Length: 171
Image 1 (cartoon, helix red, strand yellow):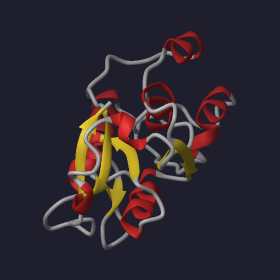
Image 2: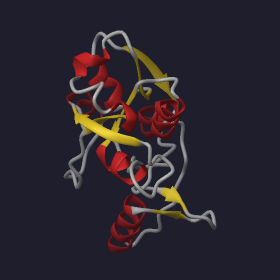
Image 3: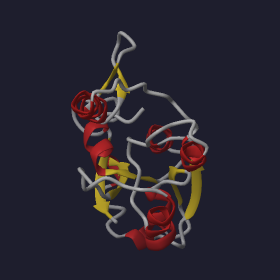
């Protein structure tokens, strides 16, 4: 799940921007989409083995991936951001402030790549999902999470379950 892009509503119906966009494109193509939840770590293998026809939810375009799969024109420009507890806003102002501290991101994600590149001295811990990374920060077991901006804006701040978290920087 990746709110607001693709997630389940209270009735268990898959909704969100990617979901609705997929349905619209499939309607134009004259096909009916079948949404399949896969192990995100195996996404490229699932595609290669033809268990799925397409990956349509938050796949970062990289040169390595371009060599192994075809891409449509990108329809969303996203970035990675650092999320912290709002109470720590004066404590962390640069990525170097996280040297030696626990920073979390979804394993294999653009966030994990950003930590390796821009926060190499942080103690990186891999999470199963971006939402898990936010929970680690909220609970205090990590100082920061690196996640997609779209998710960070949807899930943190006033009126959310993570009202005590905030975006401090983009990387």
